[in-house]
Each structure stands twice: as structure tokens, then as C-alpha cells.
Length: 246
Length: 192
Image (cartoon, rainbow over all chains, first blue to last red; front, side, top):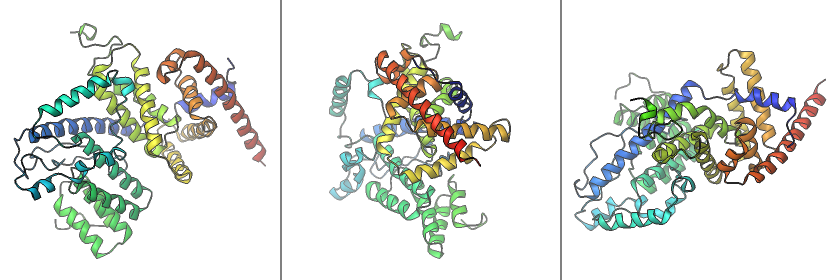
């Protein structure tokens, strides 16, 4: 087989060690993966409880769940993951309609929006039929009927939309970020990652049209989420002094 | 109990649920492979994170028939292909991000500024040359020449037969070599 010449080898050798993750990268990615795993497990447990009828309508998930913040170019933060509106036993039709989030009602549409987590079936699942049967069986045994998509799918769909907003902000397109956030509102209402959404909206507003209205929105975020890891980013984007009243 | 006596150990020596060990030992090459396979710097975090997230969820199913590195590569390849389909980017964005990457590279991770600059330059040139390969040849080339997997391992990672791997690698090397020659001629020609 034709081999590479020494110049090519030297280039590859030099480049091989030139692009390693920094210790910060290493910690950030690990932290984020573990938080995603934790969030997924906790959200799944909460959904199980809700579908079993152990949560009343409108009840909030009291246990805070750690989840990685996708805002801010990979900054790892800790935020509360809200229960995406428990679906157990709505009292009225109106309530039932409200508790079924738009995201849950649009499974097919969200499929394209929710690439993560990617589960490589070619690697992990040699028996898709049996998985499908198991899923079907599971659907039949849980009453009331679970939502049209899993909690995992919904969280990933939310993450996907917020990632687009984040990317737009990173590239200096706040108006585009606001459009993505409007889409988030339309799809998820006050979803599990609403706090991140609110922070990004504040930052985007401050970039699009700095002024009293944007400042007010940022201050509202500071007041509503004083412990948010995104606080400093919002303050910095909107120039809110740290000693401002919360 | 020593590790080798534990019943939950895969043959490769990894405890099935010992994610942190897998992560610490393999992050570097997963990260590097993602970059060399064309994931732009702004998306590297997401792709690497996704690959390890999948690995975490599937670690219990790892049976040790392949090496953990091969197994992770398969996951990474899947994630990257999925990422490519769902993140078609404009070239000007990629160029902007590439510049950012170079700035990041020169952040003093290496032993000194001169070495950092030299390595950053090598990375930049390598990435430019790799862009001359189509994705099929690039995958084989990166796995063989940069990550130094054997042809059998590459065949396993990419679901190819070994002859196809040999064939693609041969052509990829030729194309890479030609691109390097052209690059050097341009560089030399451009000098006063």
C-alpha cells in the first residue's frame, strides 16, 4: 500500500498532540454528561410517578434536578428542571388541554427537532422488534395513557431549540435567537428548561435593543432566579450591577 | 476485591459501569477524532458530549468483543454522521469558527508559545488537507493515520470489509499526499 512521505508523517505527528481538550474541557464535558444522565433519570422517575397518578394536577416537582446548562457555549450550570406539567387526572377538559403541552401533542414534528440523545441502534440494539414489542406492552400496562412522547424526548427537544438560540447568540444574531425562543414558547410553553429560556431571552433583548425595557426584563430574571448559574451572564450582557436589588 | 476478579468486568478490563475510567482514558482521542473528522470547533463539545452520553447509557451492554476504543469510535461515527445531517452549516460560519479555534489553540496549553503556535499551525494545515478528502476516505484516513487503528479495527468501526478499507486508505493517502504537495508549492511560491 502506498505510504505517506516523511513530510506528511511529520505534519500528522505535530498535529496529533496539538489539539487536545484542555483540563477545563475535560471537566466541563464530563460534568455535563453526568448531569444529563442524572436529569434524565430523575425526570423519568417523576414522569413515572405522575402517570401513576401520585401527583395531583398542577403539582410541581419539588425535587430539584441537576441539569447541564446549554447556555453560554458549554458553561456548566445547575438549574432546576421543572416537571413538564404532570398529566395525571385533569379535572376539566380545559385543564386537560392545558396540561397536555404542545410539545407532547406534536411528536412527529418534534422528531426532527430532537436529535439528542442519539442512540446508535446499529451498536446497541440488535433486536429492534423486541424493543418495539416491549414498548407496546409498556404502553398497554400504564394507565392513564402516557403522553405521546417520552420525557426524554421532550427534554431533548427543548434542548435542541435552546441550542439553536444559544448558537445564534454566540454568532451575534440576537434576533434569530429570539425567533428560536419564540418557537420554544410555542412548542413547550413553560417547559422544563424555562429558566434557561428566560435567561437567553434577557440576553438577546439586551443585545437587540438595549434600553429600559431590556433592562427591566433582565432585572426580572435576576429577581426570579437569584440562584441561577446564568445570573452573571445576564448581568454582564445587560450591565446590571451586582448590588442591584433583587 | 481486585478489579480482574469482579464479575461485572468486561474482558477489556473495564468495569461495565465505570464510566469515569472510560471517559478519562478515551476523551482525548474521541475529541481529536471528532475534530479531524470535520466537526467544527464550536460543535466539538456537543458531539463529544453526545458520544459519551450514549456511551454512558450503553456501557452496561459493552461485551468486550471489540476494544473499548473501537466501540467508542463506532458511537462517535454515528453521532458525527447524525450531526452532519442535522447541522448543515454555511462555509463562512465554518471559516469564522475555524479562526476562533486557532485562537483557542494558541492559549498556552502546550509547553510554550512557540510550540503552541507550531502545533496550531500543524493542526490548521492538517485540517485544510483533510478537506480534500471526501467523508468516506477521510474517515478511513483519520482512523488509520491519526488514530492508528489497524485495518481490521477500521473495518469494524465503519462496517466495511477489510479490502474496502485498504482500497480507501490507499486512495486517501495519495490524495492527501497530492494536497500536501500542492499546499507546499503554494506556500513556497507565495514567499518573496
